[in-house]
Length: 319
Image (cartoon, rainbow, N blue to C red):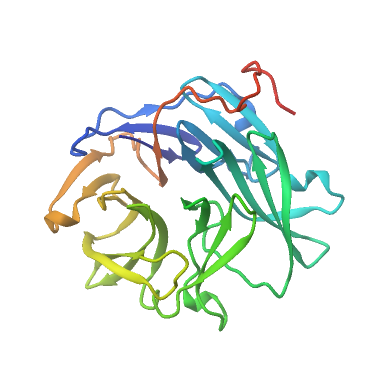
């Protein structure tokens, strides 16, 4: 399996063996497109990686669909550029709809001048955005990280805010169905009480939560799975694992193995079936190659075009 991670504004690949016990030398992903490097005081972030296509957002005006293997990229303007009233982004996500063989970007935005939320979905096959919903300010939703999401059953989900940040409102997970374009909320009730950090993952085809709590200086990771789709009372704890000091859960594999990183540039793979035994798969170099790892994404090389079924030259902008 191959994972990519971000160091500052650079993107690297870590190639893991089938046993996921060691790592080859990290390789920087090459990108010849200067437009994918955001201007000063802005940043370009990965919002998804599926079947060899990487989706990025420069937090200013554009999304990019990029295939690092073929060096093709496609620029996609923000959906609200076609409207007179300017919006700002509340949440973004990227997913593949297998039943339609289509890659889609989901975007939730809020108007500066109108107290409403807009929901837009970009279809790679159609080559355009479609506004799927407009909600007034009474539709309350909250997410902890707007550019991090996971795709489960054609729906992208964002990690929830913890209870102390919701000002009396219940903690919930926000989802956007990329087929219908409609928002949904999964109430968490008291599930996240006591956790210092919570992220969303997919494990065994189901929506999962990784909650981190601090105990005697160590970080304890609890992984929960939603056993019944859309049933907020069907959360079940799958396992609990001591992931060490100054460590956070960065990626959860389908098998339940945990990819964690610490503040000392050390990456570990933990197998809950083996208790607290772990494999150190990568150690930062003296030059600090792995400093400031922000997020981890799965990545598999492919020849899939970011232009979908439309043929374009790799140097040609779509817009």
